[in-house]
Length: 600
Image 1: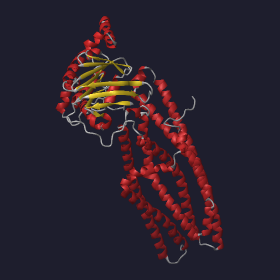
Image 2: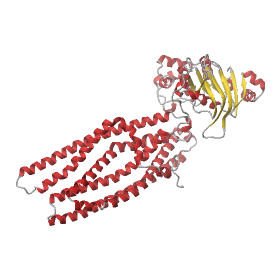
Image 3: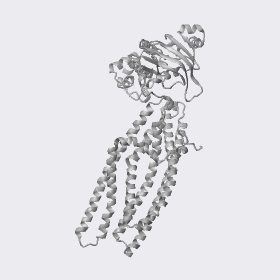
Image 4: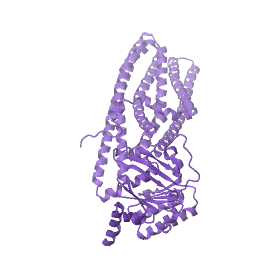
């Protein structure tokens, strides 16, 4: 199979070129609210670094006084070394506790911020970004950031302090040997910079493939019954395996590059130490420095070398975290195609439900140039029941989506009680709307909680009354735990008709002045449809009701029927009038009523 290109907006290579380790600065707004915790962690970090740097001094005193006849002095030096070790242990434990708490807190805030942003995005966002990829960013990418904030950054800072402090103390101990050590530094830095740049590219590519793998799995598992019905399991396994293998190959290239960088850096560092130690040993033999001074210098050199090696290894982690931060920041900074005004206008109180479309034209973002609505103008009066009919793709469901302001018109405007929806905050006017969608959504919760979703503060008696009105009470009561029965993910325990009745009960409970029914009875049997239709008739009294239906029998009683075709209003009126006009509606009626009766 041909090598594929990593998914995501833009090419991975191009995006990696624009990314630097500075991308981690985007985490600062999430860290700053916990600055007291941060400063305490930094204080513990500095303390452990300082204590670590004093330990070689104690070792030097022990070595230089090892042959002394005064045992008391030697005991003091050993006791001091033990005290330093105790301080180091306490400081390290304290640093771990503080930075880990900080990391967990910051990552929790990032996850909430990303979810808060994504949950309010209009549907056009999800036309271009797979849900599985978003979930990958919230989980996998934030886990990378957690490892950096909760571990890597503090370790990097500690090693940086030890590197700088150790280098300074090496200079005080022996300027000659320190100068020789510094000659090695350029040889160490060059592979870090060269291979680090390559590592950035590979880290981002790896993360993109992980997200693609998650997206593929999420899409397939959410449609598992369809996959199994069409015996598509083998192809789905092959597709997921292919994407996962590409993710593994990208990870393998990243790991190999990082391993090579680690090998080069560690070898160069310790090769330099061995050379410096050899020269130092000759100075001791010549009497130019004491044995304790050489031991002290070697310990500092080892600490500096270990710090450099640790920094080179942590650099790879920081690169991966920078890529993860970039991906999360992309979500946080994504511009929504539908924007709320900063200070929205208020709706009239009470909301009457008068809806006006003024020459509305709209194209879906995924289908530019193809009008879903083409110059639609109509007025729906308060309390009126209006049905929208027409062939598939005529724009019926689009009308519902525009009223909910899932999208904004390309031209024209939509008004609710005389106020342009674009001048209202979405959470303001949507409270006045109840929706029964074509594909009812059932959450992985109890029947009671699914109905209460329509109005979270509703009492149990109100929930049961709504279920009775939607002809859902009998089958809910027959479930093992009644209203407390768990309905499973996406309502797998329910039939299609039962799901729709739960959705209708949810809308009834919401008790909103505007009611939107998008094929609300399409999955009901004749008896249930009759019961639900009676409930809808009662519910729609005094409310502005918009009904989208293919089955014309469900809309015959509507005050007005609007016929749509190719995004345009082609006819409007009551059932009998439209049948008499012998237009598109009459043809649809003959197909459903006459042909249907003949078939029976």
